[in-house]
Amino acid sequence: MQKFDFDEWANLYQRDPAAFEARRKAVLALEMAKAGPALSAQAKVVLRKLEEQVEGKNDAERIQTSMVWMAASMRQLAGRMQDLSEATAQLERTVSR
Image 1 (cartoon, rainbow, N blue to C red):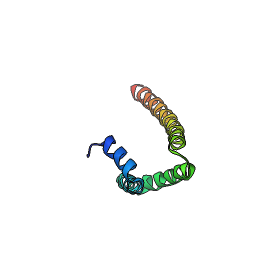
Image 2: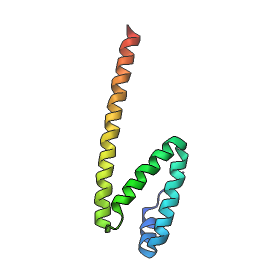
Image 3: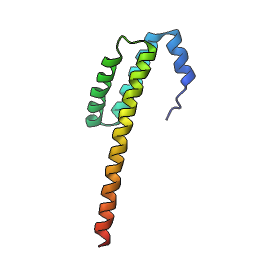
Image 4: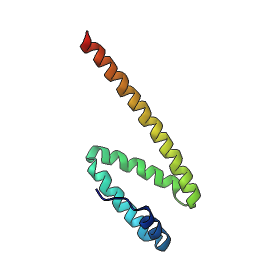
């Protein structure tokens, strides 16, 4: 796993926004491909929706929109973790009977 270098990415964005965008898309495509076809397809749909929402916005607006999406994703993940916890507890109760 390659370490993420924030300063390198930030410098690229400042020097050449088009190269930054091409690199960002390539890295996202590679990471989504690792998830397998089903999850990759879902991720592509979500990413396309996010990119549509941030298109034409300035950096501050893009960050704000991305933060809203990230918060929604975290709430969804927390809900799924709660469901998993409840299912595990139910299974433990069933096994202990």
